[in-house]
Length: 239
Image (cartoon, rainbow, N blue to C red):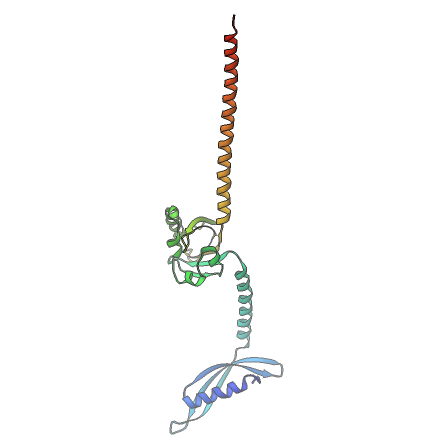
């Protein structure tokens, strides 16, 4: 056994003997060519009187499985850290129940809600949709259940504080072997600041257009008045 595991290993065998119940353990074992992982199934042995007097150990080499698990854990940790730093909320929603199977931590920045809360509340986004987008949601949800997945959605929600937020959402449909849609995944981005800037720019453009129109009307009125004055001057000065 690996030196770090010896005391624990001995305690486990004693536990099996004392409790008279089988147990399974993973242990790292030192071999001349390197460490190996073994899955050990420990069974109590009984004498003719039914008393446990020893333990039998049956071991299986699970080194390859352990290495794959470690590699997977390292990969998940790497990509989890990457997702944690993204401003976009990465999500996966199962269909047709609308359960969020996964939401990245950025859900709080995008929706104003903890990722765990969103995962515990199916179709939560339906409750958050702004009244102006209720019909939009019903229409798009119906199309989604039919397997029609647009590349993007853009809609407005009301967060838990009562504030309006604009959401831009990218989508990828996940289908089973029969071609039925079973999930949707993608990214959600809070574009409220951008939409407000666009609305302010549109308002300024309309204001500028009105101002230019009034200016044009003023110039036109001035021209008409000038022509009228010239005409009147001619009439008054006529002998």
